[in-house]
Length: 214
Figure 1 (cartoon, rainbow, N blue to C red):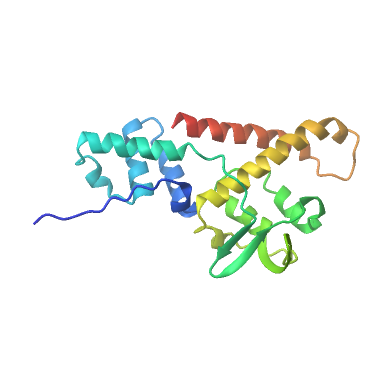
Figure 2: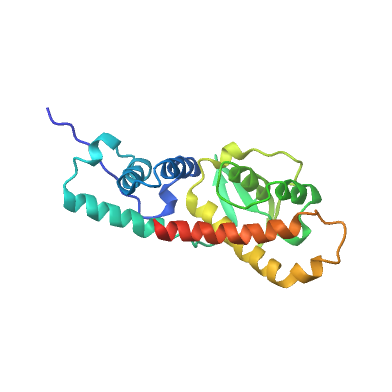
């Protein structure tokens, strides 16, 4: 008796959660020297296609799907989304980073790097908080109280995560370029702030390159 298996190929990061992406990233690191294994990981994590059936696909179908996955996989330069909904609750991105609560700034600075890894969801939990008021295009979000709940962001789609990452990347690049000299004479800032800014720029570029390589 033949078994029918449906293969759904995503065409954007909206169909991929952070949880799935982290699992894919872990497997891709494990099999980084095995191109065919990496392709199988893409099928498994992005299409939810059983690994044991990948080799049974005909060559034309296999190549076409692989190319479709690579095409959207490389598209990670996405816009910031100010509002997202999680479990029926609307969350807003920090509306004014220059006036962000000191506690939020301190907690974010502890991470040292902005990279989509196992800690990224916690950063998102600090930057996105429930919306409590809107007036036209202006809005307020819940005051930061030190609560970090990254788990709720694990099922948020990757278009939102990448949009946030590349917004921060652009902001950090501009900040690094415009303020690196002036930081030398300032006191009261975390001692590692300059190295953090520089490291973030390097890591983000490395992330971009890794997607292009794939």
